[in-house]
Image (tube, rainbow, N blue to C red; front, side, top):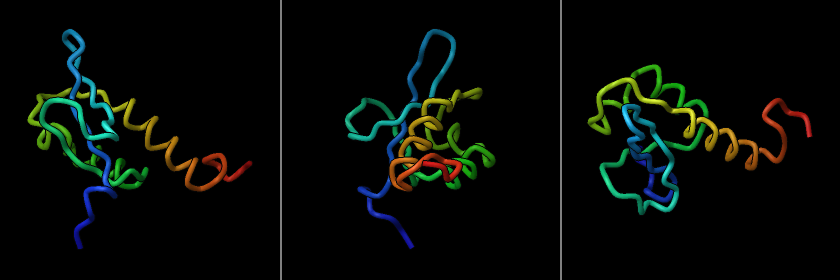
Length: 88
């Protein structure tokens, strides 16, 4: 089954000097090649484990995905209505 574009989070690479950072693009307006991901921690874990960002974004490794992790964790916390560990 395929997800609709509105259900996915667009990601792009932002070059900051010699380092490359994968950043979320929730509005889908950032320039450059984009990749799409379900905004869930499980999907992000799988993409990182498979090293999918480098291939999808055609960017050489290493890629820093911390901004994406922070965004996905914040979205997951908002959706669940509490803190990630279940406390409120």
